Structures are given as C-alpha cells and as structure tokens.
Length: 117
Length: 507
Image 1: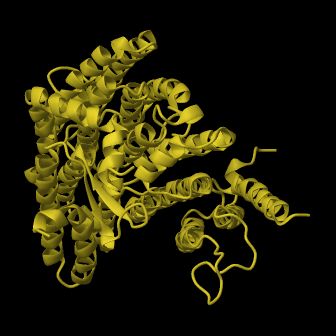
Image 2: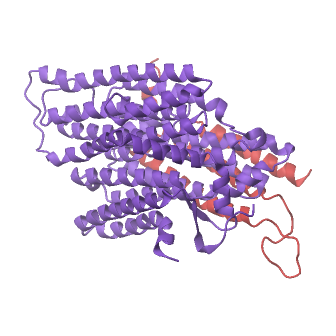
Image 3: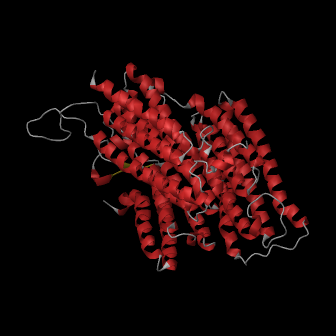
C-alpha cells in the first residue's frame, strides 16, 4: 500500500465520520463531528504540498532536496483557528444547554419534540 | 516612502489598535471608550475616503507587508473595488455605531466595542487582501467577532440561533480550506495574481480538479452571502440578534458577493480553460430563487426583524442576478445596487430597532398594537426604508433595479431576470404594505390606552434617517455613482491589469 493511499483513505474516513456526526441532532456529537472534519482538513492541507518522506522543509546541512514549507505554515494557522472555533462551539453549546435545558442543536427539548403517545 | 504609500494598511491597523484600547477603557471609563470607539470609526471613514480618492486614477496599488515582494510575501491590494467597499463599510459602521451609542445597545454587555472593531478589521482586511489564504484568515477574524456580536445581549433564543450560526460557519471554513488546499496542490501558490497566471497555464489533466476547487470556493462564498439553497442560517440568525448588530451584518453577506466578484474574473476568468466562469451556470438560478425566497419571506414574516432579514436575502438574490452573467455592464449595475442595498437593509433594521424600543411588550411582532410614542416618525422612516429596500422611486433602489434591468437586456437569460425582478418587486411591495399598515395604521385604530413606555430620545431617529438620506444622495448623484461603478467594473473585468500591478510587467 502506498503512502498516498493510506493518507487519502485516512482523510476519507475522517470526513465521512465528521459529516455523519455533524449532521446529528445533539450538540456534543456535532462538536465531535466538527473536530473530525477539521482534522481531515488539516491532513488534506498538509498533503497539498505533496507527500515526501525524510526531507527537511527549510534547511539542513548537506541536504539539497526539500519539502514544501508553505503547507506546514498554512496548517499551523488552520489548526489554531479551527481549534479556537471548536472551543467556542463547546462553550456555546454548553451555555445553550444551560439556558434552554436541551442539548438539541435546534434548542427544542426532548419532551417537546416527541409525539404524544 | 511617504505617508500616502503606507495608507492602504491603515484600515486594518486602525481597528486593530482601537479594539484593545476600548476593551481596556470600557469597564472604568465607559464614556471615554465610547468616544474612542466612535473616533476610530470616523478615522476609518476618513482613511477610506482618502483611499477612495487615491484609487480614482485607475492605478492598482499593492502594499507589500514587510517589503517582501509578491508572490512570496503577503500583499494588500488597493483598487477601485476595494476602495469602494472600504468606504461603504466605514460609512455603515460609523452610522450603526452612532445608533448603538444613542440607544445604549453597547451597554448590554461588556465587549461590544472591541468586537465591533475586530469585525471591521476582518471586513477591511478581506476587502484589501491580495492573497486567498489571508482572505480565509480575515474571514475568520470577521466571523469570530460576529459570533460575539451576535450573542451580545444574550438570551436563550439568541443562544440557540448562535449554535446553528457558528456550526454552519465552521463547516464553511472547513470547505474553504479544502478548496485552498486543492488550489495550492495544483498551482503551488495562493497569491491571487499569481494564481491567475498559473491557473491559465494548467495542463489538461488538472482541469477537473481545478473545476472542483473553483466550485468549492463558490459554495463557500455562497454560504457567506446566503445564496439559496445555502441561506437557511440567515433569517434565524439575523432575526434573533440585536437589530443594531444585524444592521452591521447587512454588509457581511455582501462580503461573500465581493469575494466572488474579486476571484471569478481574476482567477476563473476567460483565460482559465475548462474552469472559465465556473460558477456561471449555477449562480443565475440560485440568484433567481434567492430573490423569490427573500421577497416571499418578506410577505410571510411575523416580525420586523424577520422581515428585514428576508429583505437582506432578497437583495443578495437580486444583486447576484446581475453579477451572474459576468459582464462589465451588468457588474457596474450590480455594484451600484449593492451599495444602496447595504444601506437600505441596515436602515430597515435600525427602524425595526427604534420601533421595537417604543412598542414595549409588542416588540417587533407584525400585529396591531395601541398607539405608541413616536409612531408617526417611525412609520415615516419605515415607509422610506421599505421604498429603498423594494426599489421604488424616488430612492436609489429604483435606480439600481432599473440599471440591472437595462444592463441584463443583452444577456441570454434576460426574460427570467426581468420577470423575477418585476414580480418579486411586486411581492415585496405587498409584503411591506401589509407590514406597514399592520404596524402603523391598524395600530392607531385600536382604541386601547397608549403604550406607556419609558421616554425615548428623539436622537434615536437620527441614524436611520441619515442612512436613508445617503440613499437619497445616491439617487441624486446617480450619474456620478454609475460612472464610478462602470469604471470599477471595467477594472475588475480586466484581470491583466491586476496581475501586472502585483507581479510586475515581467509576467
């Protein structure tokens, strides 16, 4: 199995899981889904500079072949931003849960949304 | 280097300095913080006007951060379009902030002013940047601040709408990054001018991926612009938030449209091979649906804020109908329409705010209520704002729609555009007449005691009135404004100018 196949299938699995969870009704699962999705995005960004093993991004003595340094900078920025965003979502869903008494994304409590038997 | 050469960075630096200072002052010296905040807005307006004047010579200026030349360094780019957007944002921000100060909306929480200025920093940065990754970063700055502003004042309803708003935008950011990764993998650059050159030079094997990247990018911008079917987050969010904040948000949907106008002719223009004008086949149907959904929503709304939110949706739809054919003539009409749509949408939200504050328990519900103080003034302002939003004479919306109709006559899909604009205008007129008569006419017929609400200052009417006055001025100065819009559109539709200005004549 090639490295490309492994990375691509890892990204695919993360995206699939992320989308599935992000479409769920409860905030905790949605937050988990967003996290998986952001991991997949970071991996993808990282791979956009081509997958190269054992090469330095900037400078090492006696090395002439280099990896692309820019995706690493991009990924770093993206990680910081998505991490902060995820933290914000966690706080927000917690606050929303405390104020509305429901952890449903649409804020409708369980007993309200259930059909009367 | 003269001061003038450093001016393009000022719209980013001014709010970046003002925001932390207001945060430091807010707790102990609220008045000083408010004054500083307003001062920052005015300074930004002055800078934006200066940049607007500078950009009038038609030259595209680049500002290399750290003096690193493009495409390796980060550049800010000042052209006519960027300057126009800066002036619009600064004008809107100054008036909205003035209204927030008069109505003490900034006192409902601690961090209104810092978030307000960070939002402006994101807006200005997004208008100025010449680099797609920085566009992403400034989008995030803008969004983070908007989350804070949206939740400002709190309440369970706002929290619920806030969760959906934040989640939708995080998913949008993830898609944005995927599109950027694809583009970077294909071209090894994210500088827009460099992208324009390299996309044109891509081989046949990469065209499929390029189309995917372009369409993904358009989905992201469409999500920010609330293009149907990506609009579902908007009415709920805008109707739940404070009207002052929603008035500022009136320009946020237009940032998505701006990003489309910026990237499509430049990167996915005629020279881009299979990806040329990549969003064109999807944008027009989406825009038509947007206008219909928006104005039908205006007709169906149950509150003033909801009505204004759907009006924002409708104006984006109408605007994109003109943008979607990607011609200089229609784009010029679109730019004129966009300026007035932002101001009219914001005015409608501010009128809703003024009315809500006077109606006490009836708030902004579109239901008859007993007479309230200041009803006549509020009614007149509502009438004017509605005329502006729907596009009836004498305000600038009429000129804008007329320009769009006139310019799109040369476009293949013109019967659809004409029918949609004319029919939706009628629906909009009905919707606003119904809203206005329920709010302000049936109200006076109800013979209950007048609503006893705490005395409100007449100064609250100033900001919406000023916004409407700018609309009137835009009608009076329509000749000058359309000439400017034409020059801007011509510049945008000639991507060669941009590339040469950023990368030098060598390319």
